[in-house]
Image 1: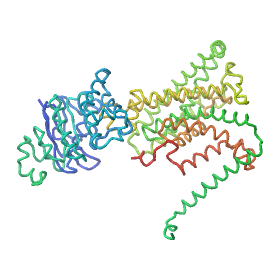
Image 2 (image 1 turned 45 degrees about the vertical axis):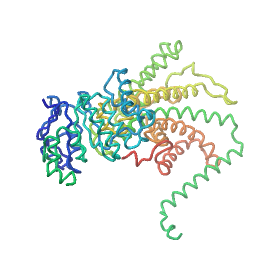
Image 3 (image 1 turned 180 degrees about the vertical axis):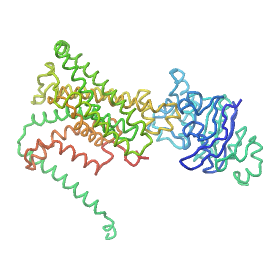
Image 4 (image 1 turned 90 degrees about the vertical axis):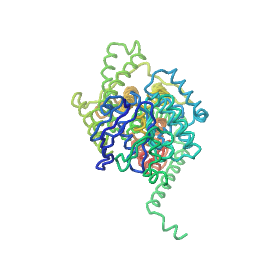
Length: 236
Length: 353
């Protein structure tokens, strides 16, 4: 059964019709990517799923339940987590406080402390900077922090908005290796990317979104070989 | 060189001239007063101490302004009335406990009970304000909740006037707080020292809550980025209510402290001036900054207390002591013109983003 399911979703920013009937599914255990150009509606899709933006039409279902009846923080309690666009770490909070915020809804202090240690093992550079305020971290370190922070809630589904944005190629590889590892640990992942090649590389399935509507969908391998995708996103 | 001169904005020229005039006036005034030897050292000490005591009260109210601004980027102009509500309600308990003789037998516990009642009442008023007057307007332009705040402030003032009239009611005298202590040759009333210590204790407590507690960390997270805070699972409505609770509790405590320290008593209008002064203090320290509000409060108290004698007297201005409020509000204007971000604040442009 689909863990996450969007059906004919229409979202607006004021009068701008940003999503024009998006339908997609993400099954348990998958990595699904949503690729597309600037302003195609990728981030809007994630904002609609997390309840930050309310669609005017259509349905969003999470784990078989109507997700639209819940506020964002309630969805987080049900196992949804998001790495926001541009990382969105709390600049004035320390690295450790950021991680604690990720575990905001959990009350098991001992397990939280253990999870924080695990994040420091996953990304040793965060451990070295645990007492620094996050605003002083480099872009790559902030992305590591944003991912770790999202994992601190022990999510079932992780939504990631452009994790490769603004990162050096070496760091992009590290981040995407980590995404695959997280997935192997049983976390379902919906990945939004402009960098189609690398996203399709690690995904099971993919969707291509263009001007607010799904243009193509299929297994990642097929999409990568699709001439239309090649031409538009993979440089021919 | 010529081209550069043309680019000088005449507003900047006027402002810089104003800056120089003020600095010269302060220096000349202070110099005249000090060389005239009109006041003795112990008089200066007692002026500073009474400034600190009055400033402590401003500081506690200012914290409420700054906390709310930090989270919602709005000035809760009804905060002076939150302060008044607590102080006024606790007055009735104060009279009752004094009549029963508890004030004489257990002064410390009795005063704590007044503070507890005032804090609870102010908290409830602050939370109701948020629920009824501000929350429905959260998405509105920033001017709208400001206008509502002023309306709410009048509502609270005239509600109290309607119930209790406009007479001043004086808190009972506390024998335990009478007397003075000798500091550096100056006889300082004990009550001033108690007021100052109480404010410092409350401030340290608040600082701990904001920096170390989970709720406090969530407050800072919400203040920085509401959307990401929601993605962490933080219910931002609860955090906002918590902010009003903290600000209200401090204002209530300040209300009782004010009642003990200032002999003129409580009245439906008593929140207005301390409210505006505390707002000035919050701006002075850097609005949105918690230690800044405390520092701003103390500083404003001391400036207001020293200013008339130190500067205005030296400039030959008659009846300088009645010009306290002039000094306080001149400070507000000057801070807004020359350092809108306040002493410890960040630049306003960043905050707005």
